[in-house]
Amino acid sequence: MLFPTLEFAIFFLAVFGISWELRRRPESRKVFLLGASYLFYGWWDWRFTALLAGSSLINYAGGRLIGLAKTERERKALLGITVALNLVILGFFKYYGFFLDSLADLLVSAGLERDLPFLEIILPVGISFFTFQGISYVTDVYRRQIEPVDSPLDVFLYISFFPQLVAGPIVRAADFLPQLRAQPRLSRSLVSLGILLIVMGLFKKMVIADYLATELVDEVFFDPSIYAGPDLALAVYAYAIQIYCDFSGYSDIAIGVAALLGYRFRWNFNQPYRAASLREFWKRWNISLSEWLRDYLYKPLGGARGGTFATYRNLFLTMVLGGIWHGAAWTFVVWGLIHGTALAVERLVASLKTVTAPVMAVAGFGPGMMAPAGPPREGGRMSRALGVFVTFNIVCLAWIFFRAENFQVALAYLQGLTDWSGPGRFTTPFLVFMVAGSLGAHFLPGDLVTRAAKALEPVGPIGLGFLLGFGILLIETVGPDGVAPFIYFQF
Image (cartoon, rainbow, N blue to C red; front, side, top):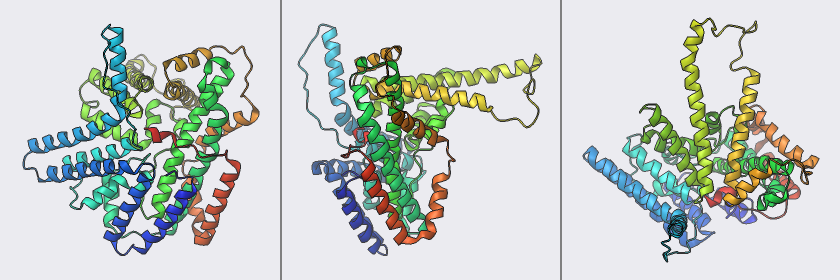
């Protein structure tokens, strides 16, 4: 079931009304929301609800057993078994075909071609997201950051709650489970914020992302060899906007829908294209995944604790595995390699600056030398602007491999970017303005949405309902025909 559809609108209106009627009966409300979440997921293919239930059962049982274990050795063994079961399920559905294809190519290149047991496996929507939530739950129980939950209902609802089920954000158990134990309240602040985020998310997805995809990105990436440099450059910048508006639009709607049901999710995007470094970019882009990779992969690998080589290795592995998480293709591995390499270079440059600063000071080049009069500005506007420009273009370089169907398409794209002799067929004023304007929105005040939601609070429920209806009607009018699936559904 897609958010921007009539089916979801009817579904959510029913869920909204019934769930608030049950607000004084918390267990009944949770049972109802769990059933609604399974209906939402099963609308795509009801058979995979069994997979979702099985994953939830594994993590509930794992959390309970870890909590009951007597020794640290038992706790660690139970955590390992539970995480391994999660990864086996994820690996089978997501990477079985990829590994067999790679093995077949390797055997052919070695002259050892064999018939392999290929199976046609359907990738369940959202399997990466609910698997990661399950792993984070049992890991936090093992680390004693949260207590194991007695009620299976709470764990099942935490893993399957429909707003964030199929494309995130990845919600932490420590943030969500306490909300299930409290009586929900629908405040004016939650209503105004929820409606504003839903309208904003729909606009990002149905107008900006879908328009750029249908009018520019899909056609250019289908065969980049027939386009000149101007079109290719515009298309990759347009894809950067498309994937941001598509994914952040889904997150906005998910956060808004949860707010209207009385639950608070953390922000998942924070103007990522204004980042002046790759490290800052990953603090602003898909924040829930970035923090998950940091807390459950980078730090367990050793983080920055094992010396210089180990730090770079852990950073590199984290980003490569993050690339593999996004998809079973070597292009995603290259995407991760680009980000991992850029992050390692940034760290190396920063460490060199730290080492050379005392030497420069002894030589007479202190931090105040040649500085203009007046209060200093951190980093300087010019250096930050240069950092934003370089970071954005590195991100866009990686997006080429992320979007390309295969290496041949990606390499053709890179080759075409070197040829600016031909005219641009897509560089129309409207498309250039849409891309430039969407990029410019990243430099608006960071608290603009919360301030706008605060200003809408006095409007009241009737006015907010009218705003929601008018916004949906306007978006439906100006957006392209049809509803394209969200990009991150495939992950």
